Amino acid sequence: MKMPTIIFIVSSFIFLGCKEDQKQNADGNLIEKDTASESGSDTLVRNFEEENISKPTKPDILTGVFIRTNAENNNCECNCVTVDFQKPTELCLDKKSGLSIMAKFRRMPDGSLSIYYEQAKNQEGVTNKKIPWDKFDKNAAIATISYTSNDAFDLDWIGFTVDGELAVDYAIYGKKNLEGNYRGK
Image (cartoon, rainbow, N blue to C red; front, side, top):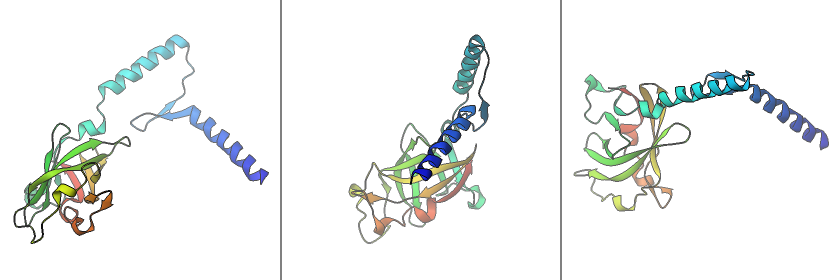
């Protein structure tokens, strides 16, 4: 029992020692540990901070209108997602019926975006049963966006929840129409 514990501790120290020598910046580029004098390192730190301040982060870059990569004729009709952090935007859940909602976008610590249900927008002629819009959680993500490049992302539909549980009867709304790959328009 002592031998596996000792091996784990030694391996941990070796791993942490390697991590000390090489660190990654926000862009994923390796930054070698600098051994310059203290006055030189102050300049390097200032330059690094200025560079990071002037470069926008990926969520800042990916705002605006994005169209599904398989949209016919580049037509935005129920094929576009408008990413806007200032106000709720309309999401088309079902092209055939015109069902749509208003949703908000939030940045996540891992660099992705989450989409949150805000309110129903258009629900006429959708189904013969009433959709319980007022019961859907507004603090649970209904979809996530993961960036694939500077002008593209993948949207993964999660679905609506009620009291923290997936609303299975309404999970299909949005999945078929929204889930997929998008590129800048």
